[in-house]
Length: 88
Image (tube, rainbow, N blue to C red):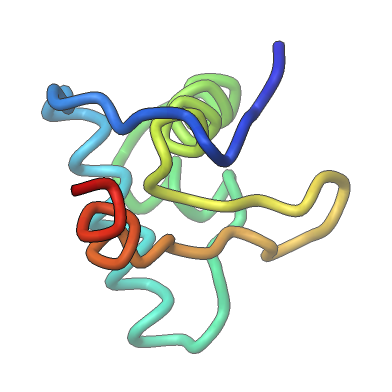
């Protein structure tokens, strides 16, 4: 599965994806580093880190996050405003 940074942003976001994105943004704002999948799962009272992995990578595919493979705490929130303006 290719993770192209040039992918067009999808218009729809599920409530669960929005919840995960909001949690990541808040966690980074409070702690200064990105949360692990385990921290996200516990914080949102979800049982499976695999579900968090799937959601986080979907958010990456949709252009909301960037992730460095095989690095801990490497999730970064993408500033979509610049990309949306340049797409006009």
